[in-house]
Image (tube, rainbow, N blue to C red; front, side):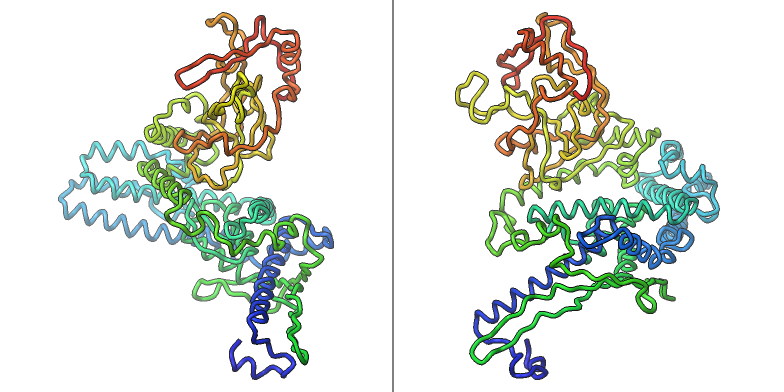
Amino acid sequence: MGYAEEAFLSPDQLPGDTFADQATEVSEYAQEAMNRVAAQYRFAGLVAGIKGPNDTDDDVDAAREAVLTALADFLNPETGPLRQEIDRLHTQLRAEQDAIRQQMLDEGVDGYSFGLVDDIFPRGHPTDQAPGMMDYMGQGGRDAAFDDAMHRHGLGAALRQRMTAARDTANQIAALETQRRAQAAAEFRAFWSGIWSKAKDYYNDKMALVAEGKYLVAAGKIVVDGVEVFHVEIVVAIITAAVIAATGGVTVAMAPIIASAVAAAIRVFKTGAGVLRRSADKMAHGRAATLFRVEVRKVETSPLNTPVAQGDPIHSHDVDVARDLTDDEKRGLNEENQGSTEPTDDAGDPGSAAAAKRRQRDADYDEITAGLTPTQLRLAASAGASPAQIAARTKLRSAYQAKFGESNLNSGMDLDEPMKLVRYPPPDKIVTWQNELAYRPEADADGAAGSPYPFGNFFDPYPSRGATPNDLGINSVGRERIEIDVSDRPGLAFEGYGAEITDTWTVKGIDPDSTTGHRVTTGGVPQWHVANTYKPHPSDSDVATMNWRELPGNKHWVEAEEAGLLDYESYPGSNGRNSYYIYGDTPPDAEGAR
């Protein structure tokens, strides 16, 4: 505190000047800042539909109505961020088309080739185009024909590269316009129902990180297309991320505009103050402020096209972090989970093993995706099975396989479902179903001390959803579910959906050529392939959390085991010890979860 500030305090309010006094002041300041964050989480939770101990359904409805009213005009599909981004990109594209034409003139390209420039995007504004054309372009439906035309016209490599980039921009515009029309066609309040759902997802993700003590990781980062745009307050981050996710197609350039609108609408300030008083012989410190108010104001667009809060608050909500937090918020935001001043093994150390692995992971990601355009990456990761999407997924899968020499993705993942590269953590935990007799950290299958059998390459990145081996495309017989901690093991994974596949490797018949024991699995849920470069080690795993005998669909298999028809065999293989369960007769039928 400076001299000017101290001049306004009465003598009994002056802060102490001992080291202990100053340290206490800093501590109270830090606690008050944390309390303010807790108040933001509580309001964000309210908007997400998560009530605190003193909240009602009316409180949820009032908070949501206030946020909707505050942002409705700014986010209107006819004038909001999607329309603004479409206009910006369209203007930029038209200028680039003119520049390409000038380059053609300078290089003496024949006049017939100029028509290709016109074909990059139809004449007129995107809002005037036929819906079918915008949808087709947005999915990259014209890409193959356009590439073929450039090749037939014999255009130079530099010119083809420039025209391909312009075409990708055109595809992006078309995808944004399709999304804008979908938003406009729906009832605007129905559109907002999707925002509440996304807000809940984002809130839960952040609280999970905070609960594990990763407060800084959970800070208000805005990420679009894998790019961290900037940091904002957590309540702004949660609502902004929800708007971006529900709106769809918003680019990095538009994210700050949306965030600034949310920040203009929502203000958080303390309504109670911590008290510092000096008695005759000592300094008595009051607790940090716990009372905060969240105010919501309507946002309009200024003449400079920037969001500005207007008038008095349309809603206010008071939060007392001492009594209004949920149990999860209390556990996640208490003093034990706010971090430590003690250094960790690799915190801030660019030479640490974890930091080196992160650098390697990011370099591998860049190398694999270098041959794909942003449009292709978006197509590969979005729902649908258009020819352009399947082509994009095939290209991404091939690049991943070329990097790591993996071949078992061809049949293990469904090309009709989304595929993408994922840099982790998060999540901090993943799951594998490992052979119960192969996984023995303390001993091998024969009971002798030894190293556990290494994990395979497929993992479930969503431990809480309770997916079964059948969902993941493997036979569960003989396996147990193991959770693996990857919180300090940065890695790269290929995410796709498990295909329907027949597991021929888990259970073998007595006759090596027999199909006895083969099991058809349904697949159908997202899973990861992790190459050996990043594959976790069994020493990172927790205890097994479920055994194959607990799955209802394995009832008859358990009976077969009890009857002595199911046995275990191990023998040396090219990749270490292979182990199978051998069934001596017709395999049992499956029923229920398996």
